[in-house]
Image (cartoon, rainbow, N blue to C red):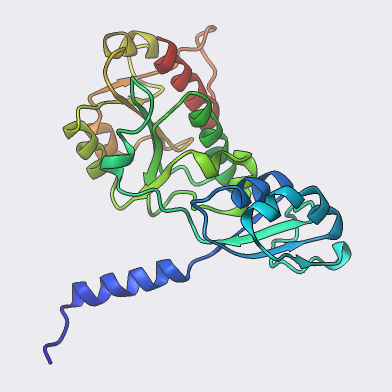
Length: 259
């Protein structure tokens, strides 16, 4: 029997590891939305009696048999500071499909948010909420050095994680090149850019656009910046000041949607 090539073995190992990965979602809102999401693979539901009663409709819709837990000794393996509200659900991460397909499924004109090394789950959760509100086709981020799907991210996203595609790609610059080949203009946000965001978006009103935001502090990496078609900044009214990345994403999405 021929020995499998190393790359085949590594690919199979990665597939098995991905299949074994699970996430604990917590909080009434996040758990309810995950229970109501037919795309979710749900494994285990732990609730207090009070939470079970409050989630009765969603539990029935999901067809799950919950485990009842004492609120003083909540049985789910959550971090001590997690505000679980008596509800926790073990799930597998969502699979939204390939970027090339997901990118073309939003309302026109298509808008995508790309995050370069944004690792704070609260920032990413807030960005997912804004992306849903403004109709973005997807939020993408590199597989490494980005916020994975976690309970904290889901709770901050307030349900948006279940509806807003969040794709973590192998290489962000390559993904941006792929989107450019599909007709997207790639616009990076950079506080040192000369162009104002509104001016940079004006000629792109009818084109699909990717808005690229970097981590607070280091900003966009060199290759990410080089991949962008143009750079722009959100100009402060007083000539100074800055927004955190989740607020900047909301402003950029609003500007890109409303011109």
